[in-house]
Length: 303
Ligand code: PEP
Ligand code: MN
Image: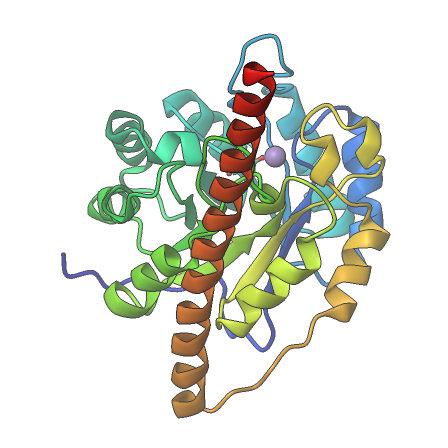
């Protein structure tokens, strides 16, 4: 589809930074996190108000009340805000509360009915929308979501790469499959701004900096990092969130390379190929380890 996509973030001189908690939990948690992020040059303050949880009985979000706190964040600290929307009611409440940017979560991007519902609710409204990749590695679904929003009249659009579900053990919570995001941006829609959500790719704090750096080396436009005043006691995604100081520490350690376009393309292509090799290596290691366990089981059984 022919699209004339406009940037969500204008006049970028450095990578976009999106930070804030996985979920808005209490007024104090939201305000204290925002207070500490206020001087860290972030472009957007994120917080989940409605949380799509894989299993029931997890914290499913504070709901509408949390939007008041985000309004307060904006008024007190001048930070722009973003929340996840998955249905008409979410869109309606978020717009009423003056949220600046909406995002569509991975579990919504997989479902064309839901994406269409959000697109219909946004018809005639000029607000930027960021679309996370679907949980399964299906580029068409991801593109389809962008197209549905574009057809509804949303032209400021961007994409968030948060990795893909996998069954079994992996060092990542969601494997990156960099080539999928790169194909979206490079080969189909180069004007789309691409953000890496290192938190949901990693699932813990140890690899956040490496994943962020890899994304910047691949010429991504920015980072989303879940940031919480007290990560260990977060009501969702505790293992992967960092404190505002931890966030700053990651950002400070990143190397932001200025690349000329020809060497940039070379760098990206090399990276893409190396990543594919790394992915295959990782799978080989897992399969070998599973095989060893089975041989051991046979040995024990024979004994
Ligand atoms: C989130 O950003 O907290 C979230 C629920 O992410 P995802 O849709 O990527 O799982
Ligand atoms: Mn989260």
